[in-house]
Length: 377
Image 1 (cartoon, helix red, strand yellow):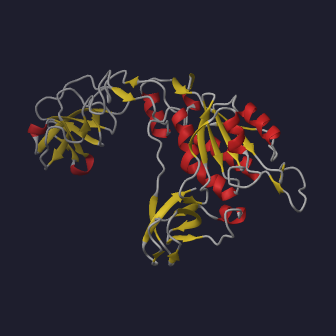
Image 2 (cartoon, rainbow, N blue to C red):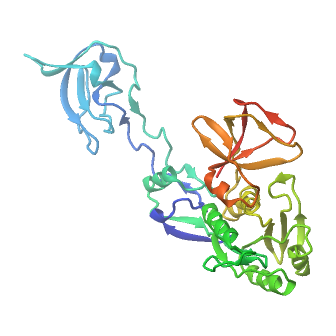
Image 3 (spheres, one colour):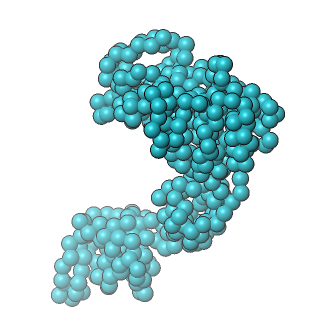
């Protein structure tokens, strides 16, 4: 994928495409970590003459000598001669008839206490971020700190989306009793955006080779092609046949999961494609498991991660072993429970869920309170 230079304020969730180094030591000075007094550790315990103060954004021009102290605020530079900061909670400020303002400190201190040494975070010239790093708020703060008002990121991939099927009509249309609206294209577009791609929803492809071929040809102008439906073993499931007609190389056409077993992945004319099953849950699940990683890799993400977490089951659960199942579920503070569903076409149950329960294909049942896999939506 190509790259582009964008303003730092527009870079959230983009993938870095350059190596960024520190422009100076960080912190660039010995930085106080506490409000208190900058001292020489060897002078404690005892009474020290206060010779001034320093706060963040200022420098103290003098030097701390024998039995002297400088009042210091969090974030301020440590004065020359001082090698420790004593927290204000451990200090008593008094007025001495001879010395004037004095701080009385009864505890000992060690050299290096309560300040961050210059360069302890990173040294000038050291690499702080590299290509493939997703830019979140902490990374953006770091880039701002080292003076990167603009940043080079990988270009977002263009992703063509084709829903297939004679039964599908546009969202704005009123369907007949044997038709359904094109929800899969809408959900895929949302998932593509969340993965960092730019979705392009193409016209619906009918269950005939001419219509499907025309839309596939148009879709191959994008960086990645996603098709929904037409990849099962039915008489009118013709997506693989059409793709083969373009000279496609198929890497796999079935996986041991439910929903979404008949998912197709391959390459044609230098472009990757996914043929996702047409039932809504199948489309959503197979995108998250397979297509999301592809979109992230196209943006420069080095190691896309499908994060399967663990949660305790709220109630017992049974399944027929043999497949890894991704079932709509509701995750709460009490644990996780499957959402009642009528199958992979039940969009209502999918909308009520906030996670997928992920099963072990070798197990048949779980007791309440046992850990089970969870994939967040």
